[in-house]
Image 1 (cartoon, each protein chain N blue to C red):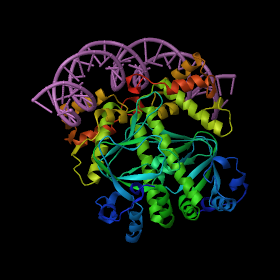
Image 2: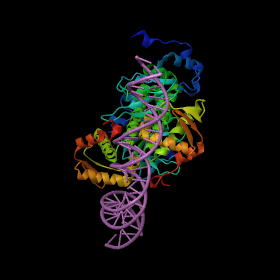
Image 3: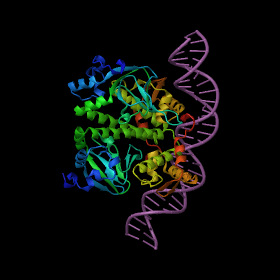
Image 4: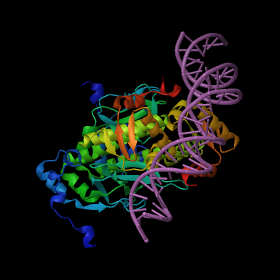
Length: 249
Length: 249
DNA sequence: CACGAGGCTTGATTCGTATCAAGGAAGCGT
DNA sequence: ACGCTTCCTTGATACGAATCAAGCCTCGTG
């Protein structure tokens, strides 16, 4: 019941109509007054430092979060196994959809750089959704989009080579940056090789090797965590190409 | 506009309160009158023969389906690659959640044996959900549960051995059968080795070999598609066990 | 009952990627 | 600037699972 956890300020920070992510965020398509009701339930944007946890595995589930700036990773710790990275979140993306209807959070979510998030207490969101059909639709859409993404990921993890996984990964990021108004050809990877490997089901050494190979083949250039895509078409071809009998080639 | 596609009969077949799946189905927790409104939107249960398609990839998305009896598989066909099985559906489970908010279906869904499904036209379900907060909650819960399942699957596909994947797969089925009142120790696999392999990211030969190994080790017995689990604990241990450096030993 | 087709098993071989190992680069706190 | 730590790269080797191949079983059909 601290002031910290309950305050809500309808200042610039929480005025959605001013937010540059407006077009890609949850309240997409809401009328102006609906948008204001929506903004009113947002807890004050919260800053996170690199490495800081937004939610820890097992925490009580109470809120969804929208990334405002920066980036995060979700990872799950399983019995006797190393953490596995399951999602990377970029600005405008929603953290916590997999916790709805559960009392506790499934995985941990950690900031990979300095990050701001908007907090949406779920019970308030539900109340609001009762009055706003548009908002309900948006929530459904976000969840089913994530279901489809996860399915794509499952296809990627089963039966694609390391090269293809990396190519798909890079193209996926490229597309997400493009959609946010950034260059799809040059961007910064806020995650480590180890995170990428965990996410793609590869050893970090393999990630490193494949990136080096892409560089040799002039598909892309990597300098530390700065990535430049040189041959988008070749990457697409690589990502879609079949392998072996399994692919029906 | 045929009679076939529009008829709805409030007969026994669509009276949810009589359905044995009542306790595990979408309308869980609805009051009796709400349950009747729910039953009223169900299209007449539709029979499917083995191998028959319920939805084809690219079909217009219009409905969710609940499996009433039998079983189905979902698979997605990707450019120049063999179909990949992404889900198996047992009675009480919901087909089509990943199509919500999309105009077209993401994958194909095919019956693996004689199967009945209840059809829920999504726009009618949405209308009804507007009046029934409980139903809204159930839809959210189902979707987020599937999100968590998909994440578990992603963890399985990246970094577990063939033996562990099969063990997890068998345990998962076992649990689902148990929850439906069937024996968790003896059940029939309605899917082929090839389907299992596709689902788990393994070659069908590998599936066959691992099952044979389990039999040698007296973990389980397989006779064609009839499976008997002999040592549940050992399977659980196997499924949870870490492998190599990646697993954090 | 014979036939054919698809599903399943088993063996030999190949190949991709994990693992082990060691050194180098970059970031951080002091 | 220093050393510490974490991250990254690169090489050698091992191993798990895919692939290729052949034969068998099972079931539905004529």
